[in-house]
Image (cartoon, rainbow, N blue to C red; front, side, top):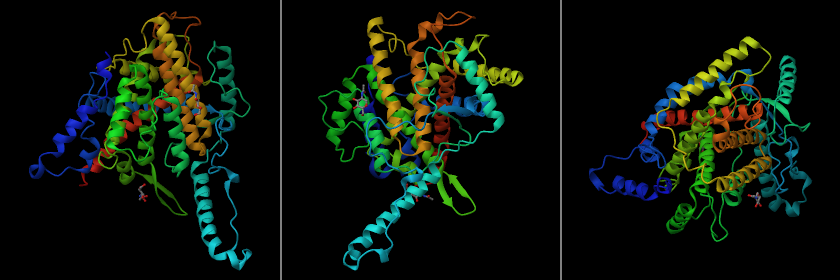
Length: 468
Ligand SMILES: *[C@@H]1O[C@H](CO)[C@@H](O)[C@H](O)[C@H]1NC(C)=O
Ligand SMILES: *[C@@H]1O[C@H](CO)[C@@H](O)[C@H](O)[C@H]1NC(C)=O
């Protein structure tokens, strides 16, 4: 089993050599091929190929999933965006109202230091502009209609009355608020550079089971990554046990997915009248082009498909939970709720019918003691990563980061609970396995994000086809 998990680095290298080694007779490599040539055919770890996933997702799943996510049950997500960052203090104030620094007017500055301070205040001015832009772009719209607020109160009662043994840690806080996800789409916010890098670095560095003996940075973002170091990195990765390697790939896949969204909904133009969002091919290439990223880009995209398969698998496993007659997508409107539950089940059955499911046998279900230990390890790492999300300076990025981490955490919880789900009573309360509304909303929205990424890859593939 372990072998199937081994990164196909060697193979990728070989494909690369074949692709570039024939000199003059080769037709020119198109921009599309540079991002996608290695992202086709069979995926590393399963009997599944990219084209099958694309077809299945883009035409059968994606449209229905979008419809489901627009419904009231799924569009309101309760989240506490005000928790302080537990790991460091120097969190960027960008995206917060009080982040602006008023620069000195030039006549306030004594002549003697003007020549030096001129430069300073220019930098400061730019900083303020950046901050203000991030604030505008990254702000979270918290408006809910009065009607919705009432309904939400009812939902809470409904949730409290059911058997929640696994409460997400912060939604009971008075600071937690409902957010309308449709009003706050995930898109380019201007939040990048050192602050965003720091977050991802900490996630990779501290929380991806990095052994003490490895000194070099784990993050594939780290600069100055020479070829030999890269080999060390990947041989380290191969030395890890299957599950820990998978953990790294899931994080990398999530990172890739978020970057696909930001490239697909880039702020292209801003006038006083309107903002125009759309595909930015350059941004996409900078993150995923095989040459520009020294081979990292295609690996990131493969990890994105890996993440897709893991979440798809979790959804197929959890069907019995949603099929129970007791389960409702409760919003207070009976007819509407029943309709949405039908749509939900339709989607889940479609997912179950996917012919090439990832085979997780012996992945999460090893010897019981070992499996429990691993489950606990994963849980701790995930906890930690969700707390790191409180350090994200841009509120909108924080919102979507938290949601996607929670969704992935829920998917893993499902995969780790396979036996409990299989033994669930057909009706009546289930004490062994339960999902809260919070977990359900994040699970489906997180999968919706990955599904959107896969769909967007098709769009980028088409856009890149016309470029050489
Ligand atoms: C959690 O993250 C912090 C900050 O990066 C790190 O210092 C700590 O070792 C991590 N703990 C675990 C269990 O991963
Ligand atoms: C697209 O992204 C690139 C790189 O991030 C940036 O330099 C460029 O200005 C963007 N293009 C548009 C039209 O916004």
